[in-house]
Image (tube, rainbow, N blue to C red; front, side, top):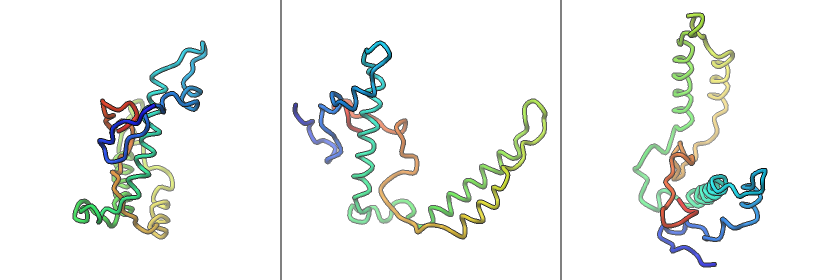
Length: 145
């Protein structure tokens, strides 16, 4: 078993990961046949998790990204976004009744609580939408992103 070429600066994992016991046990169907799509998804989730851990270990300032994006105020921005979404949803009319759906119960109380209990901002090299369907698997490596 050989390692894949390290073309992505240490993000790739070993090529034999798809043969691991863990991958096999999660990818068997009821008839015992290997479900390759499930196995591929398992491999990609594992690669995504390891990649996320590696990205969190990099200080964004050390790689020249201190002027990229906004390092402060993440939670405040999220609360504003959630409030806008909630207001839009509340104004939506029910298809069957024609009446407005109305606000989510206790949503404003939640926002008030969050505003008083905000965690400290932490900045890392990860987009807020880090998920499998926003990743492109490397075509030359079966288990890397």
